Length: 84
Picture 1 (cartoon, helix red, strand yellow):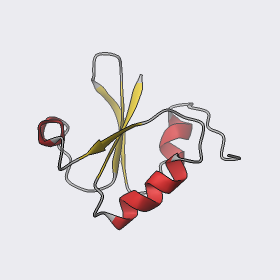
Picture 2 (picture 1 turned 30 degrees about the vertical axis):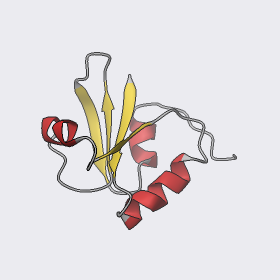
Picture 3 (picture 1 turned 90 degrees about the vertical axis):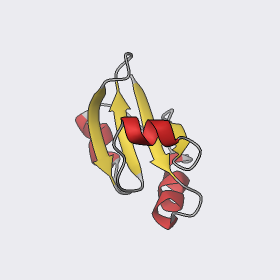
Picture 4 (picture 1 turned 120 degrees about the horizontal axis):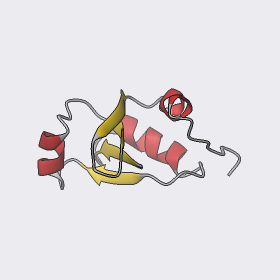
């Protein structure tokens, strides 16, 4: 399983999410939409930030748009530590 976070340097909400991601003990793959247009198309990214949980074959399991991804992690039973 992998957690993909689509964002952009010019996106203020993405910056806020990235600050939170840097504090939790979960591994995320951060993708710049401007540098990854093929992935943006493949996953149908329409809003930023978008977080997608994919399985080992790259199939989408769950998606969340916006900065509140705690519920997504909770739904996927992914534990995270905000104490960092």
